[in-house]
Image (cartoon, rainbow, N blue to C red):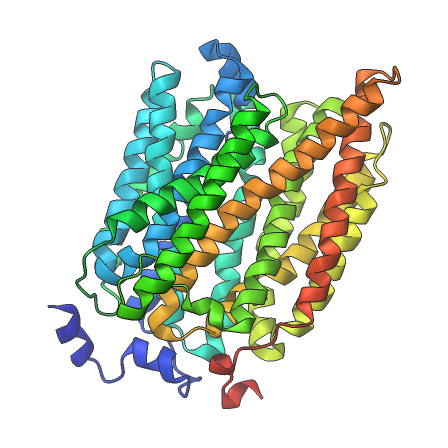
Length: 498
């Protein structure tokens, strides 16, 4: 049955429900719930791999006999591929049927996972990570677009809460998962244990996932693809190179990549503004005409930079200052990740009742307070202080992500959901790279300054971490200000919501 025939055979289309916003009490049918459930599980599995290599790097360096500057490419290459592919997903979602696009993403991810598990050396392992990232980049925008299309406005918060589990908890628990695996097995089991889960979700998806909405045929603008790859790829590469404190990439090369990426990105934006007039844009930028979407994107970037920056800083502090083992480090960070997972669905339901601002304001304040507490960490701080600060940060972030995604995308016309999702995904990658680059650079600069006065290495690192958390805490104040300007989007408002 074709997509058009399938839509015509149903008494009320899911896309119509989402577009008009008048059927707030509508329930998803079993098929729609199955589609979203499979996409949620699949996306969690693939997003987990963004940060799962962070703790494994020292083990890989010893086993593969590579330098840190080379090993960092296992993470930088993953992020670089994501940055190149994600901007194209808005085009792909509109033109490739849902089931086929899902299958493509999971086949890529599974193939990359198998390749990495069998890798005889670094080159093949890096190739596997790049192939993994190609599948990962497709899944998140596909999931968000599907939810916005299928779910009636009055129930989007609850479903977006589940998406927040994927967006925030998966990267936050990556170091914990890898720490536990490395304590029990070799690094290859990071991939061997994920592969059967990925294959099961692929098979389940091929059985249960159906096509959502209707596709449109159009040619792709090759120049836009090239500019997108150079712009977003150059920025992420440059920022990631700046952010690797152990790397040997020349600062001139790193900043050159940032400069070239910035020029290409500006050119890309101007080209999209011209092409979108005739519906030929690779990444339609009209979602930015909605103030709620624009503010939500900016606040989301600040929060994502904070999350991923903290994911990098806290393990450095715990291992290099408090001298904990990788497994213990992962376990210290685990309660925060679990708490975010528990709170995310609750926050989604609260959003449906209270709207965005009632959650965003206390959430950003809680996250900022946690970061200011982290500026008080010293070389002899107790684990109780570390865990409690991380838990407070986790509560704040849990209150923030669901309202941001729901209110931001809810302000966009249904025809532009795929592009809005792609913009959010791209912004996440840029924010993550920028946040890590900024905080690690501040940490390195401060550590060097402390070293000049003759303090021991432990105190040098402690001073650097302190300065980095000061910068993160200062940035979080801007997120608090932005939270006051976000409210439930008009398209999300239903009689049930008042």
